[in-house]
Length: 481
Image 1 (cartoon, rainbow, N blue to C red):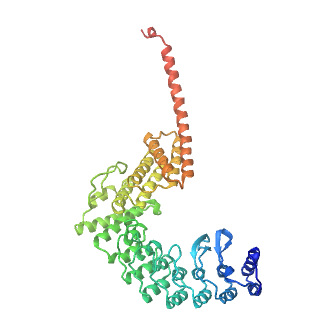
Image 2 (cartoon, one colour):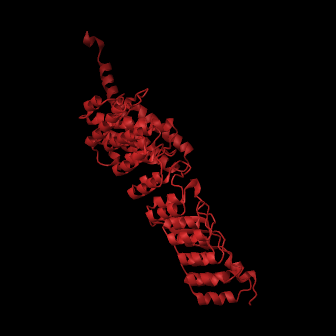
Image 3 (cartoon, one colour):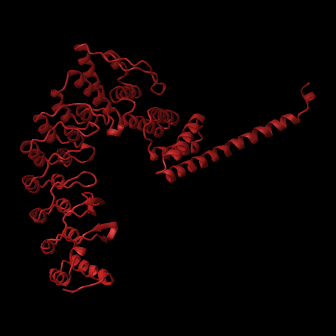
């Protein structure tokens, strides 16, 4: 065996790295045979492209060089639990960095059953958790690989370990719309279909979000319940209604109370009126509102009247009777307002979907040359976000510059309250939101530029007025006597 000093350790490392990267078993064996203390190199972290930090074993794993892995596993000094930082290609072809992962986790993540078995047979820790509390078993669930999941389970995997925020393996399989894996987790491993994330989302809620009828039916058959989340204060039934998913509403409704079913009908009606959900269909909107009011009347379940009204919504209250609804049927504006009132009651003023409906309504009004009404809706939406300390989207702020610019081009006056409000909000964001500071600063500069154009117009008007005043002042009083 060759003895060496620190002077050529880097040279040896480079030789080993080259052999592993090329998948050259013969050269790797040759180099390793000359090293007196191979663990120095086998367990060392090497800098790889894109800020990855990997052992030789991890590099071989990511390249799926099984023969190289077998050679490395023959060395008893090899530490299988060294933590690596690696990048993996996601389903959307984007690259994502994963930190503090073992080679077994990576093997499961890249969906390579042969390498998983090799590592487990050589003593790899099955229940190692990454920085986000992910495990090799979770990777198998995400990839839909029942063979790997079954193998890891048989070899001691803790299938109940959840990712951060209490995201279960069942939720991962549901999110990926994998009925086979979902069935395995529920029927064979007994996973709880009603377990929720920290913000209250269940597997049923996620299945509705993915618009998967077969998964919704499966979960309901296995006892999934319809309960409200802390995330957006919506139940799976209301989420289905919000997404205009009639088939999902129909299969979930029998599991719910009559009031929940009525509210789902009302929310579907509002969704058909609001164009951010697709084509506006006020006929369907009327039909669902009508059906809900019929049920309320039949079972004596009146709506709770709001204690106050909102000016931007014409200070209207929701229709309480079918006769009231019929009176607004042919008035598109009133039907749209009815939909927004329903959404405010069912979703609540803090719900991002309700806020988005207000912004979309404002944009539609501006597009139809009703800029001032559009600005009123945007101001109301912004006031709700400020009142309830909701996050403000930087792109929403940028759109104010767009609507103001459009108003100036069309020689429309811009309410001073709109200027004051948006400038105040952006300045607050600049002070507290350092992450988007540059973007918000550019928005502010756009608005200042627009405002300067307004001032130029005002200056011209003022000069014109002054010139008229000067002319009048030059006329002698006795000219009029």
